[in-house]
Image (tube, rainbow, N blue to C red; front, top):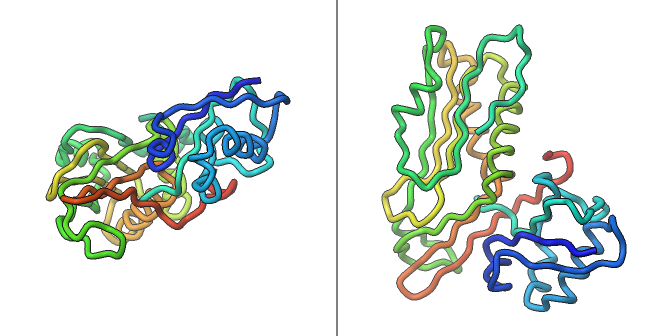
Length: 245
């Protein structure tokens, strides 16, 4: 069988393409066998496969996860740091807003999606592009960032984060998670997370912090730091497991 594989960030650069194809003798096969075939057919990718993550049908996959010819497969580095989830009919409304977008953020409009007669507090986090990074291995000054995302999987993981927030903080109502993509200059906002509830003391601060931390762990988004003399893809250290699905 032949499988098409989507590539992102450093793997895309190594292959000089965002898609590759490999042929395998068995259908289905496993992720481990698939990676062996990729390394053999595309030597430039082999060094990166040791730390790469694999998604099958937009879910994180392990080495023994089966892969068939009709599956959607993606390989990508650890992330650098939509639809509405199912809700029991008896529960109060839990408004959500998930987006992976190249558009400028309208924060007031997002807040408006989360507010209502029962909402008395909205806590939010906004990330921006820094001009000076001062970290080993990165340009000393950033000209701009290039953000890339596995869009369909990213919005599904945002919905998962909302469900996790509601499980931990049941009184949190609205949840918004937004990631911008494309080229973003110094001072532009990049990421936005907001949680809404009746009062400030029912977990909205903690939930918003959890939301941005979790987004950096499991939402497949990567950024390239572009300086005057070089550019570097930023990879995270968290390695999702099957329990992160």
